[in-house]
Length: 134
Image (tube, one colour):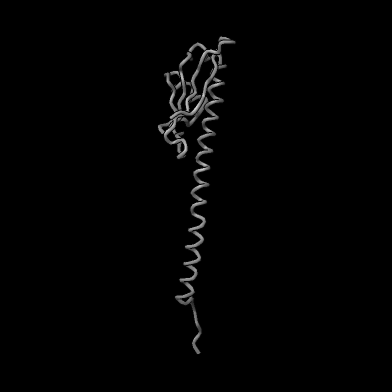
């Protein structure tokens, strides 16, 4: 009598069918979790920019160089400052690698996060307004 040394075609087809069902069920969940993590990363970077903007507004070294209306924007194009001081001095100092940070989630793909410096009427000091816009 000859020994059977392998799987039959039917057994292989059954295993492939089971794997296809598992992939069909799990793939949408995987895509959803990947997008959720991308959105969280974008929100985390926006939060870092908010904190950075508050530090800049309070930093006496940059106080005379930042004016009301200056801003930092975060979008699919990356992070940019509205002035040379913000772009070439402040961002590299406070956010190393800012030039590689871009919006990557579908939720914020067509939006821009803007941190705008304004004059606080009560204190007559720089303050920050922030938000996502289309």
